[in-house]
Image (cartoon, rainbow, N blue to C red; front, side):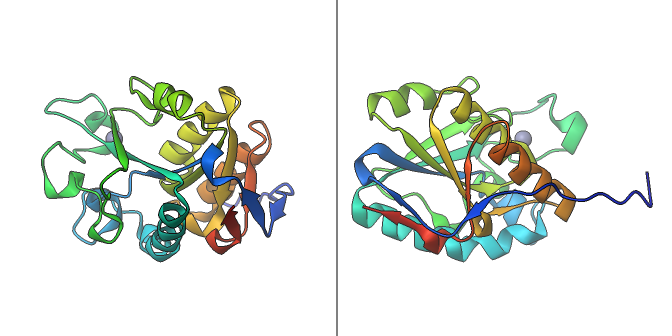
Length: 201
Ligand code: ZN
């Protein structure tokens, strides 16, 4: 397929959203050393650039009492996903840990998941219901894999999904824009240009 040129369909992008803090949760997907840090097993180079915007968004979310979730991709010896990606985020290793800059704080909820989808086989759906969350701001990596599946799964449950463009990352531009297109088109999520454009009220 080399030489194939594609146009990216129009992806609507908004500059600013205001989300009621009490009905909103922020989720940080798989910002773990193996995916983000030099020396990791499966590094997405662009993910490093998302740390600061996510950090600032987390700070504003916590200050407003927005509930904060993390997904933590978690595998054990012999996981079938290793045949696709090689060994990564083995439970208990350095690579499995969430990056220091975004360390979960007391009161945050860390959901360990074994597949791309943060809802699959985890208590995430139940927790979002319990806390009456209607809006989910999705950040993290990888945009077209775990972010897309988690955002899509949220949308299938009729949560309103918001994705700040500077808080998600992929291995290449095609994957990045394909993810944003999928989130905004079939899943009707809102793409926000920057994390700074997400206001909690
Ligand atoms: Zn994995």
